[in-house]
Amino acid sequence: MTAANENAELIETDVVIIGAGPCGLFAVFELGLLDLKCHVVDILGRAGGQCAELYPEKPIYDVPALPVVTGQELTDRLMEQIKPFGPEFHFDERIDELTREADGRFRLVSDQGTVFLTKVVVIAAGGGSFTPKRPPLDGIENYEGSSVFYSVRKIESMRGRDVVVIGGGDSALDWTLSLQPVAKSLTLIHRRDEFRAAPHSVEKMRALVAEGKVRLAIGQVTALQGDGKNLQSVTLKTGTGEETLPCDAMLPFFGLTMKLGPVANWGLNLNENLVPVDTERFETSEKGIFAIGDINSYPGKLKLILSGFHEAALMAQAASRIVNPDKKVLFQYTTSSSSLQKKLGVK
Image (cartoon, rainbow, N blue to C red; front, side, top):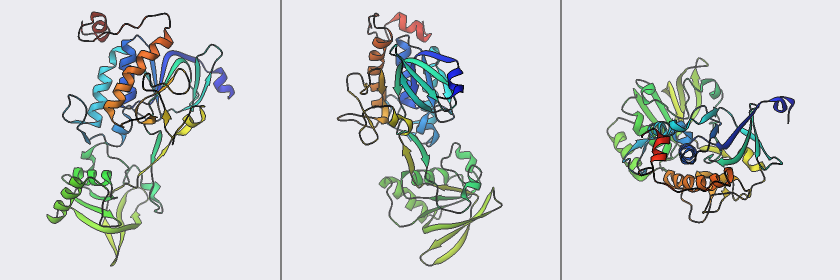
């Protein structure tokens, strides 16, 4: 540990949640109902995890009671729901070190030097740290953020632009369909005329191609042209030769590189880069460290947001017994408990 970390002021709390995606946010709610104070750490710059970072305007259809909700809307609703509990967020930080103190608590140190002392750790890190795979094109990094995007936060930012989407999976097809109505022109490029995306998305794309609203090109981009910051065009190589396409917005979807990151060094049992847990408490092999959401593994696991919500609820009950071992955990319903309603500010 560096001297800076040794001199850093300790943040003492009941629970540190690693990951501010939907499961991590709902964990704040469940823990708050049990009077547990939470600090939330996320490597991204805002709440929402992959849900808000990669698919902020993509519709989600399987969240109970919400027939359709976007990733950003779901994040906003969860943030509103946890307001009464005043969680503290630490964005653009990654927990690099985790050790157990002599008194049983955990000491966590972030890459920014923030030090936490906590009785419970909840890993809600999704698939781990993720970064988009960068296409092997000379100078592409110069255009990232201005003309090259690996996700779209605002569809309106693409209005009137010559958009080139590269890829053949769900992300490429989803954004092709979403951006076509606002783009000046839209070209979908894939190396072959076969797609890994959902069949209905492929059908919709082919219908737009037939109507002349989307161009489908089978080939690959081999070069970029621009002023070093803003793209003007790209070189497309197909089976019949090369051509230049106008392009001031390029969206390459070559997949994500998912890394478990520092979690792999914390002494937990791992199984294929996932963290095995029990299904009573969703506790890991280390007492006091829990894992919920996509990062955990157990028989019958389904990688669904609603599954993570269930895991958060059971985790919270077990966490309460660790933080307050002498306090009896009384199970209550928010619909009928006046004390819970008071915490939520509704009574």
